[in-house]
Length: 253
Image (cartoon, rainbow, N blue to C red; front, top):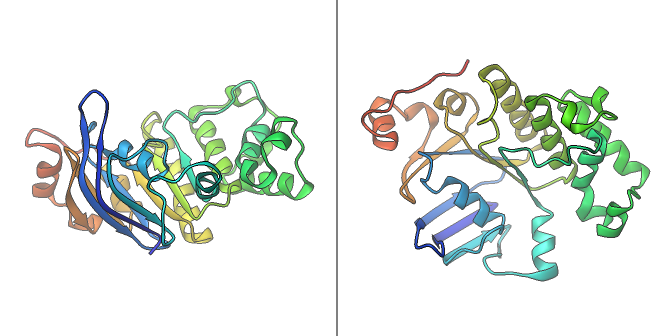
């Protein structure tokens, strides 16, 4: 087991109770997908795991260690083992693709070396290998903002690969992409999971992608887990329970 969450709550300063007693165990090597309506708590869950936000109550254990309220150097060490890919890519748009990917080595080379672009040869080699893994090595020297949305997301994925994480979190990584590109980008997460053995937790909306890539699914509704099981077992009844009686499934091929 790589991750264990017990009775996790998150209440924001405005009073929004985003997570309400979430219990979750994730085994090493899983491709877990989290589904649910916007506002169901999916992003909050990932941000609590990655300690971008502080949980209000409950515990988060990563690799057997309680990381719920750690700070300072201890937190930096844990975060170096947990990578995160966001919906909006979070690239330095005026910098080259390679420079953006090299940012994933911060935990290995340190902040000062990263600021002055002082990277060992093996880190450069790893960055080019990461770009090759996501199929855009030839774009290494071009500016990030010259790429399409799908290519920019692949740069973000390559950056996470360079981090060499034990756990990769992806928060709606294809939400801003067209259907064809969405499927292409998801294949790289699948490749990282299967070929590199990296545990993946990914928030998604489209059940067609969930059924294709997930090994297990949980569904959040109003901050609580309402479904946990196999992707294939989400039938129309479960779909309506999770998304509402008037929802219609949209398929991505």
